[in-house]
Image (cartoon, rainbow, N blue to C red):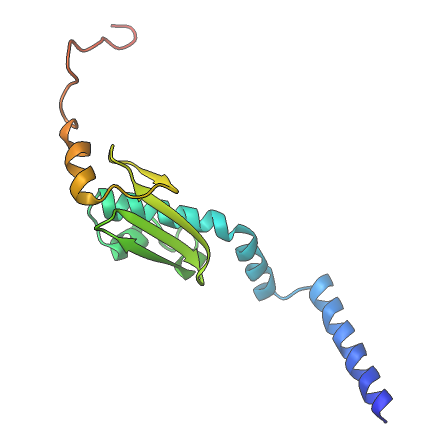
Length: 144
């Protein structure tokens, strides 16, 4: 009796494993895709939030709705982010895993694995030279 039950369980487990391997359900395919590309998606989410929230001063909800919205991919909403505005840093990851760190540099750009310069220190320096011509004469463009 015990051997029959044990054999039935083993055969059922093998059948389920074969089914998942040969014809996996759509949910399994999507989860497999997410785990394969989670690091890349975490970097994308962190980068977009760094530029949108820290550099442009927008809200996280606005950046998620426009840059990370459903027209890009619904699965990006599964990635959580921690934004530290004082330090100028963003960490994004999937379920606490595959975390990627972006920081705001002193020149006013965002970069991966950079400790943030902080908004108080980076923003005035980064914005000081914008909108003005550089010192000295402007060089003509091609064909001028």
